[in-house]
Length: 322
Image (cartoon, rainbow, N blue to C red):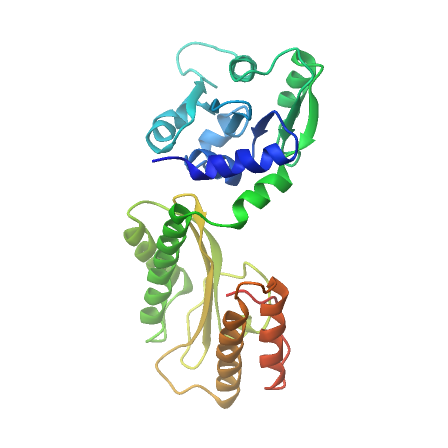
């Protein structure tokens, strides 16, 4: 299977006039390689000398991942049309210089894909490229002109490939499993938010088939009145008639899903005020969805949602999106 995402990134980077690219953000490394670049968290991230990077030639089909060896197995299994190059950041038995290993690999990989003494343009991500990498580039390749890659990758991401659509659909299904579990958890009052959250995570990870990195919140009762993200879970026991609000964002196979739902706890009838907000939110959601058509702008969806809220005498207190 061809790596259409890498092809799109190359096409957009060429429009910038770049000859090579060195990508260093997790999302963009994942995009061009198909390797699920890990979130910067935990022991492996702490021991690494730099985040995973992708070096790409725009003159030919050369491309390589530059990663610590702890990620090598997964990278080789997941990546497509990109060579995997790894370095040891640490050795448990013999003292080594992990930083030197990383810089040596970066140097050799850049030379391998064609970077040399000529005057060329290298596209980088200024948000995430490490100082050590930038210093090496300026020292080893002094004629290279640095340009920013961000706009090209944004353009490449803008239209999804069929592979990406499948990944996004599955990420949404995983999220749905969590929201479905929360509906079960809210049928009865008297449950602790931590226990409810654990049940939600369990349901999503079973659906995904592996552990997930999750960002989100679960709040109940009076905490649903304001935005204090992430406001929970906390050591709080639910009460009948209270609201439960969950904003959930799991990362599944490198792609994020984001959903929110609000439920009445304890199987009791919603109050008139709760019904007002519920109906307004539902109508705003459908109005926004209807505005998401070819030729429209993202702001059109927000405007449609806001107008739906106005019909109920309400204002959107946050942003519109899910």
